[in-house]
Amino acid sequence: MRFISVLRTFSIALLFGAGLEISQMNRPRKVIGFLDVFNQWDPSLIFVMIGAILTNGLLYMIFIKKGRIDKERGPLFASEFMLPQKKKGDFPLFIGSALFGIGWGLSGFCPGPALSGLFRLQSELILVAISIIAGFLLYEVSQLVKKN
Image 1 (spheres, rainbow, N blue to C red):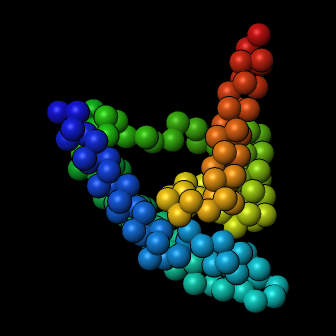
Image 2 (cartoon, one colour):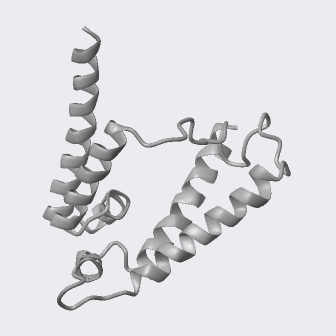
């Protein structure tokens, strides 16, 4: 059973990675070109984002909101649906979004494409991955300090 779970996860990751590669979202030049709205703007990633939003939104409405999937049973390839619990934005969401955007804009690497690009063994991708992990750990440490 464990092998099947790993195979499912690998298949989904492979599909996701292929989408990143085909859309070129894992290439900093493409991403920075999209973010450079005042100079040499490349609007092509809008279509990737719209495609992702429409697909996810449509499937969410059809399967979750309309009750066509049993929420208790869970999705096909995970133990549970990861649905948002909060209905409004808050300070941590605002700060986290801003930090995410600053990091993406400065590096041209979104975390998913950066991690998928590690297989290219480029030094900047390794540095980005280490920095992402360091950011995760820094947050966890800050939460521990906050509790004490």
